[in-house]
Length: 436
Image (cartoon, rainbow, N blue to C red; front, top):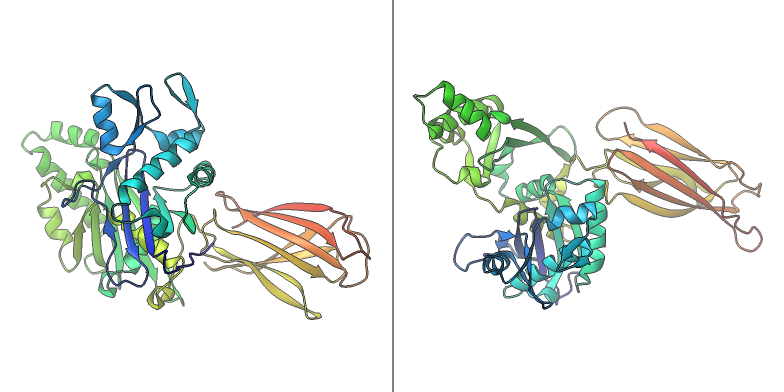
């Protein structure tokens, strides 16, 4: 459902929901200002809200974030951590001998975070709330759907996307100079694997297709650093990290092919980058910060209902996206026509279609699959075995399509008949189609 953008619903909110912490950014429809990130402490860049709740002992009073941590330190309540993973697994949360539904607990955490935000953005003024998470899989999407039901908020549109989508949304709303060539994002927590996400553009297509190339560099982990340090006693830990990151950059950042670079994560906050930063800054813009994903999600919320003209020149093909246009041949105004059902570029967890068609006495349905990544258009036949014989154009079919993470389209067809003269049999046919 698209945001209505009524006068009383003007805020677009991006909510970066993580296992350990979350951030919230917001913008307003029609504004040229960049999204604002909610600061836990006024006047600072302390944006992280710990993903924790504490229930005050003996009473139904809950605290979230840093306040929850403080109450737990005082021993005045029971702390709940790992709320997101509990919601995904469905594992009940036990507090003071009582079991709580993990999805309802996650919804409670989110609502309490929005209460914190309400000093700047009243909840009833939010038109679209976009959650962004590290990656999407089927259990996570199912958990988020349950959470959405528990939220029960006066918000027109609640949706979610991956960090990759949020990165794309953020870039798309920056000056063209920052994405006229490829862009690259490095994510590093300071102890584990370093990840790079290079946004690549195929300018030969119309619209321009953008996609991400992901790489991981385990040599930047603490364990790898310690091994290198042991074999090179003359090099300090920070110098070694700078040297290793420089070698990483020379592998994945060509001198002239990158317009901008973004460094996010706790690992980049300490001042160890010297030679590596000098190399990275040569002929390109470099940004250091930690709130890119929540700001990108705020832009994603904005573009669900008010997509700028400049953004229409681009088309993002992420890991979660359908790579094929799907349609069906059916009757309209006494002639066979192509009906689009699902569009390439739609996230698999939002891809779906439910339509009714008149078929011309045929015993088959023909789906047309057209890949946008190259390759030939192909036809998939749904055989309507056992369909009653009726005169032409007196059979109505309900066709439902959905998609799963594994790249399969689930097709469900149902006979609806044609009025009282040709009653429905309610026969159904199912087929699973692999997108290759």
